[in-house]
Length: 271
Length: 315
Image 1 (tube, rainbow over the protein chains, first blue to last red):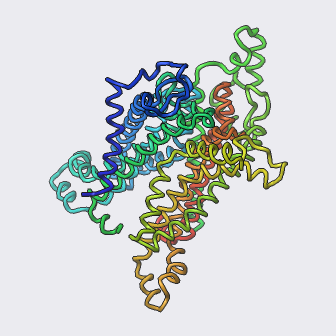
Image 2 (cartoon, one colour; image 1 turned 60 degrees about the horizontal axis):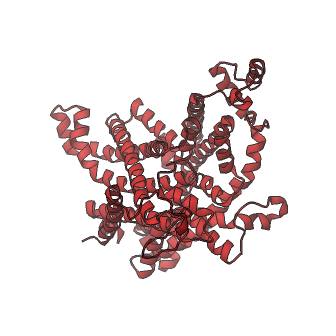
């Protein structure tokens, strides 16, 4: 079996599992203050140590995983939900005004990095996890639109699509019944990559205060808290950092593994 | 080439017009009147009206949009609501930190990525290749602001080689300025270098399979000579594109990295302005960031057309 895929899936499931378990159980109350035990390093009682309020870092990371995964997942959903239909539409009407408008619109959205969208939204509506979702989601739309259109364009030249057209199917039906299933693999791989980028972006946004707000724990916020403590309690910065790195690494490895698995031609070309 | 360039330029203008309209409309939706925010709850109606007209808030929205755009075209971004100083001056000061930081990071990432990518490609499938690829996999996964904190922990707090934050200013000399920007630039460069090294490697691998490479070898060039004389030059085209596209990520990254090091750049300016509800500054900085991304993409398109004549013919 594919080693990247296995390792990636294993890493990803650890954090997925941690997020799910946190709904029913965490070692401590993630918001429970315990000033007497503040800034403790990793120990048996607190495997990842405690923060400047004595909160258990493992519990916060588990609940933080929920925030990261939810934000990134919904953002991928937004990107796919809007981007894929747009890409299919553009490909079905290739060369037309619709195609041109969609593609130029894509270029335009591309010029707004997620953090810039987040800055705009926050300036107007204030900070919050929802804004991070919207900002990252909008950023994802052109990514999916572009990749869908690119793959769909080459499919439209194939004989089986010609056959479907001869059979009298509409462009919309062909897109849904024949094009979409054939670009699905590509979308799954891209979805994994955008998921990992989403986790990174969420961490960055909540680090600068544009994402999840306290008391909701998020990995980025934990790092922001850790910054002033880094000289006396490095574990406060190390633990959430490792959580982000391992999750992103896991998703990226999974994406690479899936791509090799779903497209055997690449496996040959790459090695 | 002229027709191609004209067409690209027109699309640049349209993009800028639409982008500015989007930014203006979004900021317009913001609840609250900047004038009453500045004067507080107990302001006299006359004072409020005077300030509103001073800020141009009594004009209609289309008028204000046109005034904002035409102002920007003349390099006038308006007056800050909170500081009452020209926004152009505020941005100008900050650019002296943000732009050098982004360029420094870009230079560092190229300096690391090119040799790493070439090394990996020339040892395809061997231990060196696997090692470099593993390192880049890790480099892509590390959040740069976290890496920045670790750099501070090691090089500022423990080794005391660099200061943990702040900027001395360029008037203290080029070396002092660069010294202060070194850790931020390294942090910013890490993910870029990882991505760039991967692109460099795969672009080189693509080129290595080309017929002209076989011809070069058949002429008697060693693998290394063929790589340097023919391979690298052809692989540079996709690599340059990625460098252009990465620019927006570099800018976005610098906004966050400035927070770690308390650098007085555009990022800090925009966050201060958000908390002070100084929307005109937010609006202008965002427009400037988007403008730079669109401009870089335009330049990449032009460079493309210059390098690859087929692109010119197609339009």
